[in-house]
Image (cartoon, rainbow, N blue to C red; front, side, top):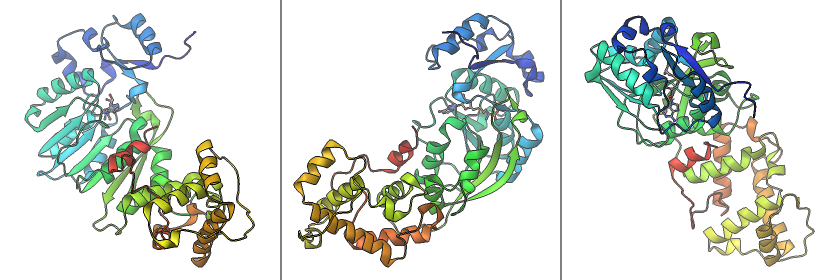
Length: 391
Ligand code: SAH
């Protein structure tokens, strides 16, 4: 296959802001920094481009697949550290330190920085650079995928992260169980806008709803793509995420499963979403499994079915044939009744506040309707939620 556009970018060391000083100290023509490490997982196409160029001196190959776009503007780096309100007693977690443009500034302000970096070559450059600054005692580097690493205790997160892991990383931070003061993150602009969106905004989605339940998000500034090396295709924004002091008393498994249902088609009305036969069967199964209450053993009566028969699976058809049409119709009427009681039948989830969504969920749960399989939970923990955003 003809490769028109390589996925790697050779980074000339002389263009890195830190290298005026540290290139001398690296003490090599840096071909060691352009060689792939044996456990690189990049696309084989990257390899092809790499081989053609790898013996060129003074180059550090940056992998687009690892989101390697270095922030080079010192003014912006300083602003990020300033706005993060780093205290001399703080341990700061940095995800994806790269060559350390932000790390060095964080080390100057904090007691300690724990940096999680997936790329061994970056770790090598980072260690060298930090040692040259005499700051090595304050730095602890974990060379791992941040999504697989266990986070140590930290006070703050400050990071220009690889954009490919934005969703699962934000989920891991806010639902991961580590208490922290704030996370200052440089994110893709569109992703930041979604986190900042309010009900009714076109960007408002399930991630925004789930983050808002437990944290407040503040806009700090936009950052042009021109401030990165190499220049990415997208602009960026800095936001600060602050965990809320108090979060609503709700079962999180129920909440995530509920918002997943509501936001599967975020612009559909709730009435339409809950009319789908597949969804009704799923909820009916859960209601039966979760509660032994007689309320859930529905009695067949002569009701006409107006169920939406779209998108049934074989399993659903099997289950549906084991319970009568009228049983399902009654169950559907129960759901519609709940939505109508609250005045939510014709509302779209993307326009509802978290308080309203929490209220609807409480109405369902009180009526014995559940969204999460509490009897046979599949990986029901916070990390599973994070993982749900990985694909
Ligand atoms: N923060 C630096 C570098 C940003 S580039 C700067 O602003 O200049 C993103 C960095 O994240 C790269 O160094 C890349 O190797 C690293 N990275 C990519 N995926 C990662 C992952 N899953 N876990 C940890 N680090 C990752």
